[in-house]
Amino acid sequence: MMYKQGKYQIVSKKTLAKGIFDIEVLCPDVAELAEAGQFAQVAAEGFFLRRPISICDIDKDKGTIRLVFEIRGKGTEKLAELNKGQLIDIIAPLGKGFKVLEGKKAICVGGGIGVPPMVGIAKAYGANAVAISGFRNMAAVILQEDFKAAGVETILCTDDGSAGRKGFVTDALEEQIAREKPDIIVACGPMVMLKRIADIAEKNGIECQVSLEQRMACGVGACLVCACRTVKDGKEIHSHVCKDGPVFDSKEVVFE
Amino acid sequence: MNRLNVNFCGVDFKNPIVPASGTYGYGREYECLYPLSTLGGISVKGTTLHRREGNPAPRVAETPSGMLNSVGLQNGGVDKFLSYELPNLVTKDTRIIANIAGSTIEECAELAAKLKDSDIDMIELNISCPNVKQGGAAFGTDCNIAGAVTKAVKDNSDKPVMVKLSPNVTSIVDIAKSVEANGADAVSLINTLLGMRIDINTGRPILKNNVGGLSGPAVFPVAVRMVWQVANAVNIPVCGMGGVSTWEDAVEIMMVGASLVQVGAAIFNDPFAPVQIIDGLQKFCEDKGINNISEIVGTVKPW
Figure 1 (spheres, each protein chain N blue to C red):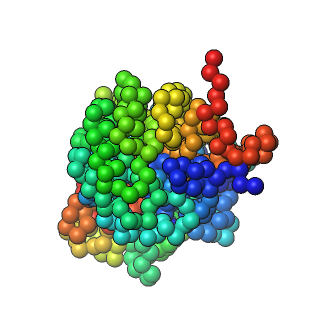
Figure 2 (cartoon, rainbow over the protein chains, first blue to last red; figure 1 turned 30 degrees about the vertical axis):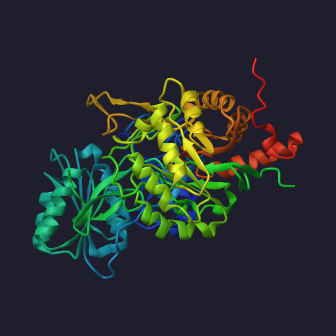
Figure 3 (cartoon, rainbow over the protein chains, first blue to last red; figure 1 turned 60 degrees about the vertical axis):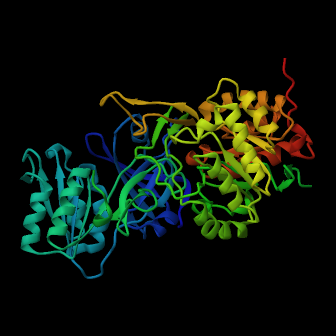
């Protein structure tokens, strides 16, 4: 494994939706190593533990990564106070990212704050990717232009129908599979959504990778707090989201 | 002049700073940041006779200036340690402290026997894990059992045995005296303090295990007090730990009697913490004209 720890400059900061921020960090050594689906452990001033935040996008030419996060508590509230020009203390890139199957077709499914890590992987597949994103309502919709700019077809779903189609990403996924079966499905979002996507993938005989979340401490695989239930060689074991994941083959994951 | 080398139970450490068991794995995860040879030693992840899966997640909760954990000794078992981790560790030019935990006295003895003739430098016998139902803290809170486990391990070991003590007791001094009387070569303290946090929106504990061990800067003053009390009561060396995060903390805990220092949860906040502490100690010695850091051990002048 190879990662860096340091204080890096924030080169841009945007508010994408209420309580959701997009910061671009100039960190050439991290960007060089980073792969779509990996994450950063971000220090929040005054808090003991770092906050794991998925890497939304990587620009190896500019030497930047984008971190898109939602205010979930006091720690992320503190992170949201950081501004352009200030330094951010990160450990990155961490964990295992998504597979990129050259020349193959992918459907990237994100739910809510699970959408940001879909940007980097959808870009890697470009025109071979379809991005299905789900949000509560129009006000919560983020990152659709990023997918489009990368030539990725987008399907937008909202719970209340205020933007895109009304309904769940899983319905949109099944329809898209019926139109054109992909080689792989990648997904990030709530566990119930991931479980349903894993079922759909299995039913259709499609490879599927899901990105999981868990409370963390070290972020590098040393402390073992971020356990998740997985199956290996027919036996249920505790793997660790930070090092064995966050991206897992959906067949390995034991969904609660 | 090497101002930081220390001798602890007859083992030479190039400096007194050792990442604490459970916070550093077997070193593999931090090697890309700095060479492990920088460290005085490594106290490896708590190792049991058989592989353990540990407790269900969530296993961590943040606290003011610290954290709770309830990992529950997840590890690959002693055979995997000997066949996979130890051969890698011996190439790293640092001291290896094998942290072992058993659910019965017999298991502890068997673990010690398995480590005989191995390349480890010391055993750290964990009789203080708050997160397992059998053994663990149940051993470390009873003087007689603590003594019996210590004796069983000593009888089956050819290595110096350091016993890691629980702070969750009425008198840590009594436990320390009991393990000393039963042959312990050193004691290390403190393990984590038992704690609990609640998610007020769900009304449920954050930890799936309900309770867990508190570590981090929050526990540091408790560690200093207990190291001071124990160091004054026993004649064996003391390894101090519990919330040590800076070189000043290391100096403080050494002044109350620790001749070796473990650094734990601080690493999660800053993986370079052990290295910065070592650099800080070196500079402290140079600035104060201290020839060897051991000179400050136990020099506190209590009122």
